[in-house]
Amino acid sequence: MSKLWGGRFTKETNKLVEEFTASIEFDQQLANEDIEGSLAHVQMLGECNIIPQEDAEMIKEGLLRIQKKIASGEVQFSVEHEDIHMNIEKLLIEEVGPVGGKLHTGRSRNDQVATDMHLYLRTKTEKIIQYVNDVQEALLLQAKEHVETILPGYTHLQRAQPVSFAHHLLAYFWMFQRDKERLQDSLTRINVLPLGAGALAGTTFPIDRERVAEILGFDGIYPNSMDAVSDRDFILEFLSSASIVMTHISRLSEELVIWSSQEFQFVELDDSFCTGSSIMPQKKNPDVPELLRAKTGRVYGDLFGLLTVLKGLPLAYNKDMQEDKEGMFDTVKTLEGSLTLLAPMIETMTVKKENMYQAVKEDFSNATDIADYLVTKGLPFREAHEVIGKIVLYAIQQEKYLVNLTLDEYKQFHSYFEEDIYETLDPRQVVAARKSTGGTSQDQVRQQIALAEEKIK
Ligand code: ARG
Image 1 (cartoon, rainbow, N blue to C red):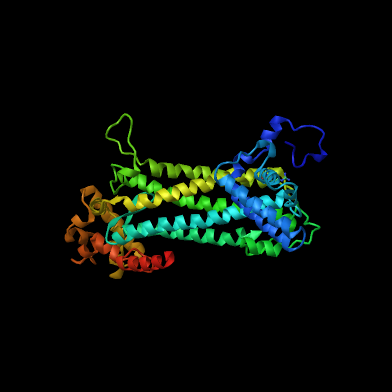
Image 2 (image 1 turned 45 degrees about the vertical axis):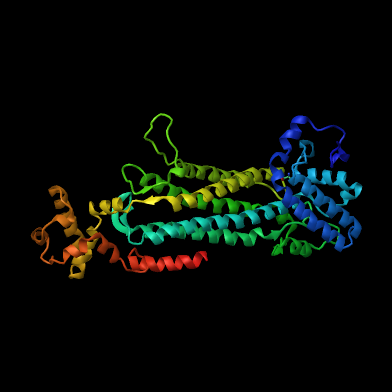
């Protein structure tokens, strides 16, 4: 079968070159978008009398029949026709005859492929926003159950100050909220139409780009034809937003791995989300969060791959740009898979609140509170810090926690100590006292939950 661009050539393409330059193996994923774009283009061609109305109709019907055939798996794509665009055009000409050759009037594969990618990422971005929202719902569900559950809060992975478990989970809720907002915002740049830019310079035909944008539901058109065909910023932006989503997933996954270890035992992941060992019968491994953590790497790789492809490319279209697709597909697949697993895994995990509470009882994470206690009695904070540091050292040497020291012992360090110091030391009180806006007190956390509920409505 001859090439659509064969006229100028005197020799057959080398078979290896044909395989090396073809993208059909992966860009067939864009078949629906390609047909959608063509349907809009041909409708406009007819409306603007660039081709006869009846030809436009025949082409449209032919495209719809091809779409059905592709969906039912009847179609065999061929490497000989390089990519999805020429495969479909070839199929169209077979389907409706030479009139099919009018579809490509006033268009190039350069503006066509860019349009396909915009359509594809619009659908996928909207879907991914929904999946992020599902993860937020799962976090919120657990948060509501655990406002009163207290665990050590960490800095440097050293116990710092006790916090409500809901507060800890909600920190992730807000990360995912920013992810959603970032993706939502990127839609304003995704939802712009490149079609009508031609190969790079526009076209001699009296096309109506605004009409095509309207049919395809785009908010606007690219004002510069050269930018339209060579812009891949919207994909870079998607990949970087995706990388940030994966960073959040990875951090949360790391905590789940730590929390479900024998050493912590703060949560237990549901059996249906874990796997066993082929040799050690006792094992229950957190494979899912481990893989989520690892898959972050490939998404970063996809971002860096495309950044590297694009750097130094002269205007306008270059074949290099064909390399924008596999990484994008890979990131979409990774993100969809990761988010849809994360939500039910969070929802079904068991939170071991007794173990969490036991941990806060056996640490010095209330030390800041006795420093604050002295401050409320009039001591400058820096001095109070020094006094409590000495008390902590003393307690460690005595193998005691702060609650186990007697009032006499406290008084040896400072005369301001009274009986009420013991109320201050209670972990529940330590949490409740952090009432500042956005703090971990149970009241603040309840307000935060109300705010979070607003965001996912
Ligand atoms: N398969 C190509 C790509 O994905 C389509 C555009 C080809 N344009 C060209 N002038 N060779 O980039």
